Image (cartoon, rainbow, N blue to C red; front, side, top):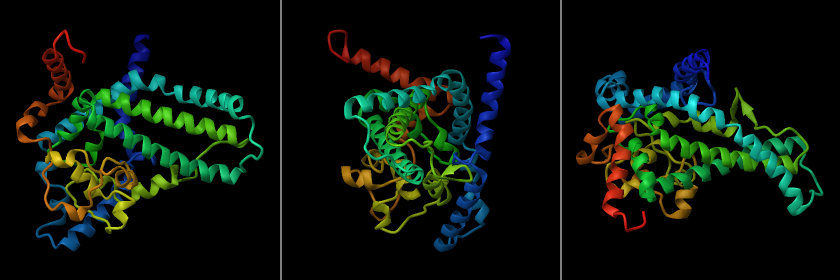
Length: 323
């Protein structure tokens, strides 16, 4: 890679986080932030919270605290990581869908009836959204169950205060795990629809975003990582995860670590016994416990601590035991 190419990629990485503000497929898209602000006012008004609304939404200790500074640092560090190490491999999803499309006729023969253009768009939008949600639930659960994965995912849970930017607080290794999961899911689903339909495979979109994801973004997705406790109706929290349900997942109470693991839908947590409704938890404190939080108090510690902990795990296991 030439020096000019490196420079171009660095510029791309620096601007990437700011581009999220104008990307309808990203949670930080400005209209989504504004809709979340409106919902925060609804919670503020209904809860009869004393004091200024702006102080309630933007307390300095949350937005300018040490935990938030780590969030901001990881956003830019991961942007560089994405551009240099993840971006070049995203085309794998296209190759995967192509080979899935070639494989299916050999196994099942050609379909007798093909999907129409309208059926293709509607079904592809629904199936892709549900499949991605399930795959993210599964990889998320594995990150909590498998000790090696948990050491990297712990970086996300180490946040002691949360803002919408905390969503991007991830260790680069976790980014790889999520990217692989999403790429595989999209590749397989797209390949299946290329097999079933002769029409272009595309999602139903509005303002450039998947229409189903758009609803999720508009109705409080940014409040999931915040102190604003927006709750849904009891019955609805068995179908869709409310912002407060995700905040419960970030509780420093170990009993809450493995609960509410879903992304958008609550049905996976309901089906697999990991669901907690808002009315089942009264108070929470974010983080992983005061004893361990000191190990994640800076950007460098968040990047290095998982490797340090894994090395300690290897040493405890010893050379004569399997890891």
